[in-house]
Image (cartoon, rainbow, N blue to C red):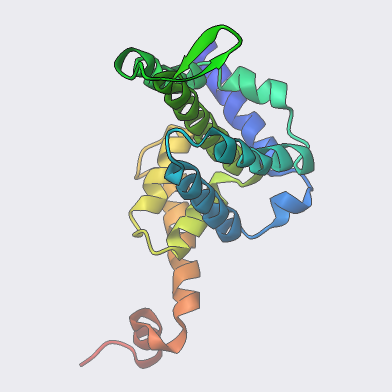
Length: 204
């Protein structure tokens, strides 16, 4: 029960963060989703030895933490399990890439060490970007943004179900499906099939 209670508390806390009256929370969810995707794409495109360029990408999460008034300490506490797993990815690079590229004092700096640090930073940035998206956007709005990107109607109830620990046939999930499809049909106007069917009725 403690684990369930903690999980429910975390979900409720994230909902409270997303419901805060901050200008970043009021941005259209599609804008924030696209910005997150662009940020992740650019971050992953850096070469494994380009540490200087990668560090500049830290401006994005720092700005979001500040303008969204999100506690960095609480965020790290909630991500304390995920972040070590992400950092674990690059631990073996120094073993396989031992070419010395410089010295820090008398300590040799190898290419594997540098690539290990860049991989860890990429993983940390990715986790923080996803966390900040969820902390500033409710899951319903994220599902709506995914629907606008035409990722498929089935993704919306599954996404909502996963976030709430429910099943695809639960009332809340069905409501998310109906709302997302309704938003999609409104955007289609008179050119879409659903609007045409409503106007002309069934064929005889």
